[in-house]
Length: 491
Image 1 (cartoon, rainbow, N blue to C red):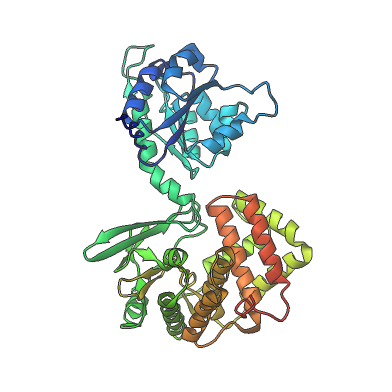
Image 2 (tube, rainbow, N blue to C red; image 1 turned 30 degrees about the vertical axis):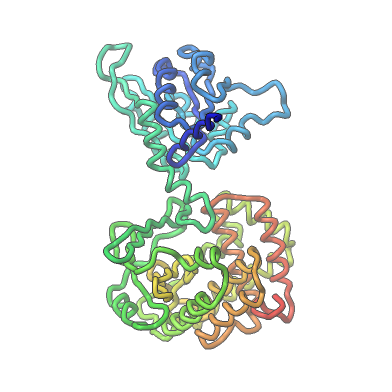
């Protein structure tokens, strides 16, 4: 009988591809041993190492080669057609710069990209973990403090606080550095949050971070603004929260206002999955029709309440207005707007801007949820739902909330397979619950919602030229749709 092949090594928790950039600190001399320990503790981890020219004074590539998949010099390749920095940036899930000299830190913080490693770190969407190694006086220096502040502000960067060590130069505990193991631990601690923020429709983006944990017999949803959030949550009105909490007792969809907990809002509900995830997994059907009908009714009841002290337009429409005007604070979103306007052409682009201006000028406003997406509708075990509310409360025309949900459904129908009739029944259920549909303006309202979603993906998840081109085609159809509407049977 033949011996069965050995089982493959287990994958490490979280990430499995690590790019290690070694810079010219004396601490680099310990890396062969540190890499041996790393390989033994995480046998499924694939490691590629890039060694800067200054680092080769303290450690050779030959010494590191046995412990890594590949060891390369931080030099531009002779083959000009080979973009080494692009290969590294796309391959890595996590980049660790260890040990990082003050010189490399300053070049990175200043935006320099004069070596393949620097260019890769500047451009990658991977998580970047920086582990400084500083001489006596380094932590107190104005340069280090400025670089620390600048780099920590980057959404995909974590800077490991260095620990005191004995300086080789003075023999006193005046130097500052960390171990490679501490850098890996810091990367792992941030990895889950970063990975979520890199996936559209997942539980975290640069705009919003969400944690769901068991809470008694249900779940606590903790939501907080992401590192790139355009603006803070709407302040809580305790009186209004009480009204909303008791408004729909016994209905299929109920309102759940959030409790303030520091910079977060906490919502206590029975379910652990948003309707968006359930819909994409299970597809449209009778259970989702029930939810959409209940959501329509909930929005109608909300809009019947007086706006009271809630004022100001929706946060989402402010983002959209700035974006369409070419004034987005997000560089990736601004690039997406330029590409989209080129694809649509001046006439269609101006039409989008005009439709947005019409909403801003509409004086007839109601108390509005502001962002009633299917990611905020939590499915309960009984088949009903809890609509998380409060972060985006605003005064807006009645159609703002209804168009938000309709736009999501039209976009899902467009991007995913399934029976057009079943998707249409979801829209019909939403409008039936609300008591009216979007009428002749449906195409323009849905187009604005989809344009806003493209902005949010580009600003808070990542710029994707192919995705912009795909959305441009659909938006071109909606913007130039005459006499039809997205809830028509032939949409």
